[in-house]
Length: 223
Ligand SMILES: Cc1ncc(CN)c(N)n1
Image (cartoon, rainbow, N blue to C red; front, side, top):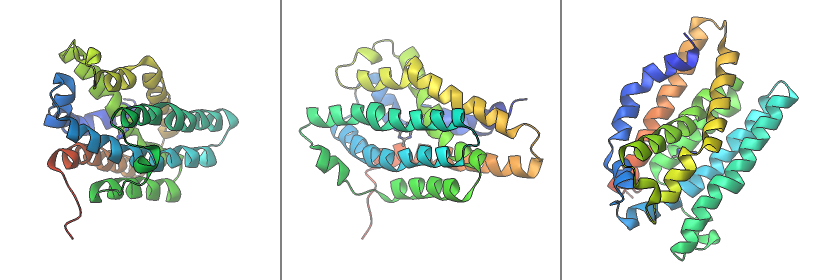
């Protein structure tokens, strides 16, 4: 069995629960309150600033030019493709780029990005990938699931662009490239190392669920 299949099985229940989360469902149904989406978009923008750095670290840890170039492409696509989606939404809501950048992270947002950056800085390339992969892979899954479940979802005047971007073949091909690289890197690795990688994938999948939930519940610092 490919290691990515093992990872998928490990987190299947968490991802299914994520698919049913009212925030995610509201994106598909189109009835998510706009204030929740604005809060998400601002938190996600600063999340992506840190997330981009993981790709830069991936280029540092890559062992060949082809892999370096692919991480550089992922970095570019995140800064200029994915984050452009957020800047476009912000402009619609009258939020400036500076206001976006000055958003203060919630506890869950900060904990999630610090966790991934810590793994990326201290671990080898396979660890970096398992920590960042639920982010890309689960968004690709969620958006395709929503597009199938709610055929009108990708035409929604507000949330349609979000669904189209994450369900796109371009986004999917970046996620698939990472999955395939991880499968190559883990071939023949001892069980002790595979279990540690599985642990990163599980933790990041839990954080993905928590990210949706903290927006929905309006999490903030208690003091
Ligand atoms: C929290 C989160 N997770 C995943 C993605 C998809 N890159 C995102 N934009 N934000």
